Length: 378
Image (cartoon, rainbow, N blue to C red; front, side, top):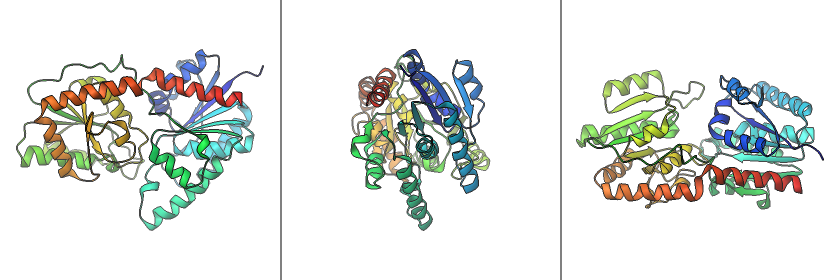
């Protein structure tokens, strides 16, 4: 019997560790030979230390140089020819597109494509955005012409977008809500007393809503005199054109409306030390991990009525939805929760129940493993 071997292809080793490590461990425990392919990053050594084989390929996360992109595709083709996997699992946009095309070229017969958001290109209204969107649709169609294909979506908007683009068949689509959360690592603890805390944890990108978050803090603290502390967790992303800058950080620190904490790995502790979790994103989200973690911690959420974000909560039950790019509406929703501790606690309990029902890492891993076996059985 042919050995079951799987190759994960992902943009960065850090993303693999934060979003897909439990799945790779489960596959290995089930007898699969597991290889991880990613762009460069310091976390590559940690992947190897965990006992996995790891290869680097040149994946530029936001680059659009056609020669570099072609080189990325050729490197993936060469690696797949060498590894001869029975199944490839493609994660994040460029690995899905280039990995899918490479799988066709090299004859890989089973492909899983994980759509963790479609990025900003599907939401752009500019002329340039329209042209890029047409190109990306063509690439998705090419990547999804597989012998055996399953495309995993985290929200229905992304699924409908690719169905409308005629990139795939409805029978090839599967829905799995996020990358899962270990409930033991994200316990529910009592809310802190004294001054309430509102926290946002994300990469510091404009389309993650970071500027709206800062403005909402200014409205509540400086204009309305509300006693509250705003904490911003996350790092700059210099390779991303929508990243905030060092000047922005300096300005926010001088303004004192928010505390800038930088990158933190202890998100469970940070959420436990907060009363409300906020993510005013209008990025092309799949299902934001930060909101899944907030639900697990039993914290009320304020987020945007935007694909992915609205799928991570029960609107009106575990959190509040606000329009995108609307700092006043964001401030209003936060103030409502600040002034309604009973409602906040009720939403937190509903969020934890949602996490227990839909977001547990055990459930997410099991759903993936069933897809793998389904593909190999056909």
